[in-house]
Amino acid sequence: MVLLDGKKTSSDLKDEIAIAVKQLKADGKKTPHLAAILVGTDGASMTYVNSKVKACELVGFNSTLIDLPESTSEEQLLHEIELLNNDTDIDGFIVQLPLPKHIDEQKVLMAVNPDKDVDGFHPVNVGKMALDLPTFLPATPYGILELLERYKVETSGKNVVVIGRSHIVGRPMSILLSQKRSAGNATVTLVHSLTKDIKAFTLNADIIVAALGIPEFLTGDMVKDGVTIIDVGITRVDDATRPRGYRIAGDVHFESVSKKAGYITPVPGGVGPMTIAMLLKNTLLACERR
Ligand code: GUN
Image (cartoon, rainbow, N blue to C red):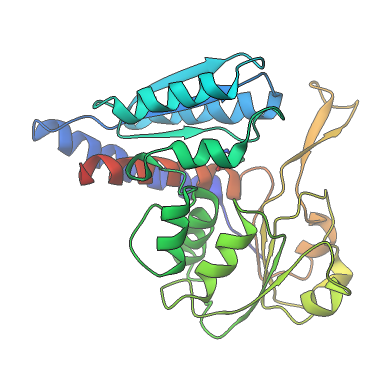
């Protein structure tokens, strides 16, 4: 069993990005600048956004965190987005999801200038992705492709099962893995909460991407020997034995599945760090494009 080490791979990627930033600066070009909007005080979202800002510092980017209260109205948020759209120093920005219930997420994502949409969530960018046109790929699926490529996991002609149809992970992942590309050309099945017998599909899979958000859903009896496992889950589960009172659980029951897997991502230290590295890569691309 080989661990797909997202921590190490993302660190390599960040080193590569830092070198590119040094070169931009040496050439007298603009320093990449990422902004993030956070609305409210959701613990996990605050952790992610802070990690993103910290990663910017590490590679030499400029970063701006716009921290708004839970009570922010949709109109106020749209105004902040407009300011970032028009700010010539900002190369790209993200609005951390989920948003408070009184704000229409789709309306917000549509307001982001597609050229600054380094999350790749705007319908224009989703459309370009689906049509194999160059664009910002959503960071989590992009990170998974990068991990598979760097570990030389063969995807061409393989049976891939993606569990979960979210707009952020499952849906784009299923599209990307089926495309004519490196870390693509797979036969992809997307299963979800209304699929009749998920196990019947996973037992036949060469690669499984678990992105449904149910802790330890995928167990050893559901997979075949030699399978490649990508675990996207990051749920906080109460655990009184931990200093913080919780632990982070993946969507995969690691102990039983790792006994059969050829390759597997750990949680934490698998997909999570890759997501941040790919967001930086998209921001570098946005800066270079401008
Ligand atoms: N919430 C969970 N994942 C993501 C992500 O990749 N981008 C944003 N903006 N919010 C998220």
